[in-house]
Image (cartoon, rainbow, N blue to C red; front, side):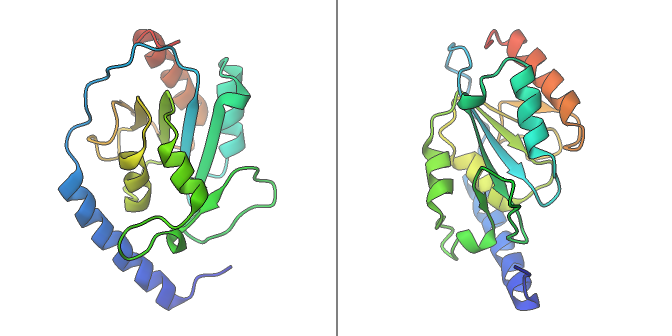
Length: 179
């Protein structure tokens, strides 16, 4: 499905107004209160810019995370879904002008109390930031290049270097005694 120019224009306005709303809501992320070991991991991916989501998941499995405890949801600005994905993909069409998410899989993902949410995007995408902000995950990890108020821990790399991200992610979890 290709986006028309008018649709792209409307998405630009949604993005602009959602950024304004986020700015009003964001405050520093609360202090980490859970001492629990990591069991469940939620991964929020921007597949508009990163195309190796399954390789990222495999790297986490190789780092001793159980595959059955890893949930993925992906954003694609073009609304395209690959036939090989076995996880939900959403786009701008799944949020209305009141910034209410209209996709059940996204709402379920937000409500899931993951032990860790990995916000796997390194650009300031307001829709992804909105989901990160609303997530019920007890610990949030993201990229240094994204708004620092959204996550407990930030990793300084780029999305294309997923192996380095996973290596640093595991090191940080050891430091916090989470694994």
